[in-house]
Figure 1 (cartoon, rainbow, N blue to C red):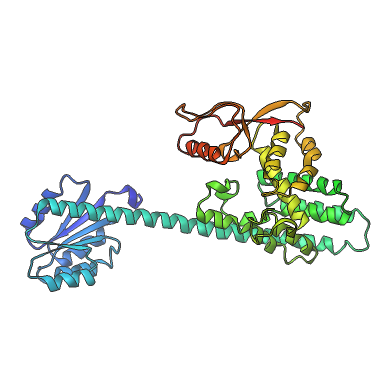
Figure 2 (cartoon, rainbow, N blue to C red):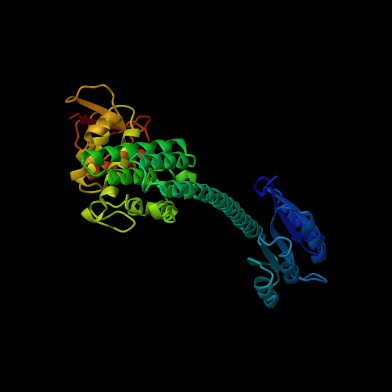
Length: 435
């Protein structure tokens, strides 16, 4: 049985039996397990047998070991327990000693007021419980940290195995036929996705397909296309040193520590492949795929054309894949609409159109273009400029936004606030126009 499942134990120490009985009667209605001892020596012996002592109440004047000495010794057995000293007005020096050396959190003068003493006991037990919960959480955090370190060590070993294979394959590139880069990519793909989970594997593969097609549409040379394809495939490798709970969490729902950890993954990904000489050309693309066109991205705050072309293409493909995977229908139209809204802010607006055709192919749904339809999205995907196609109501049925409303920043903030506090069962329906 864990500490949190046991009754809190209280040890009362006094050399007068009538005081012990009085204190037991006083605490009889409290949800506590009260134990007594008639001396400091006897109190230490009792402590050896108990397992969840949250409070020690001790008289100061006792024959042999006094209260201050006993409380000091008790720390060897129950370091986390709270301590209260019962003392007379004339024992001020002993009281100071009990507080400074014995770990007493407070003292109560004798004769005491019953209500004051019960309140002091409740406060002390509550402090112990809070400390116990804090220690429990720290143990969980330390365990998770250890598990993460072990997981990272295993990941490092598997990555080293993968990069060793990459190195072997890349050494054969020079002097061989034009199919060799494709062979290298295939081997990288096979090795890397042994490490990744299903959802992340689909994301990486789709981003790679989108980037490759866009690069070909731009008539880039074959070496550049192959380099962009590989960088797109590996762009999120740095995420796999993070806690699993944050891998697919929306950025705006992350805590400050989670966000700080998330913002490290481009740097971590760059570092993972730094040791492979033939992958040097893709490192700036992995590092820069979260730079924003407006200069507010990370890790370097690059702006516009300062961001490598491949990184700008990966950013667009990344947003398209995440947008398409967040809805059940009209995926291509919604993804391209969403990318358009981010043009000039997160994304290079001149490059967004390069993805139009391949996005419709990847997410083909057999529909005719040029019609107005709608898509259901999550409240965190709602952006200014989107048109509401159905009334938006809170979980309690309060109308938040009428059908046909063109969203602005304040409307988006209003809906997000209500959805966090009072979420309805359905998402938000927005209008899209297919090109």
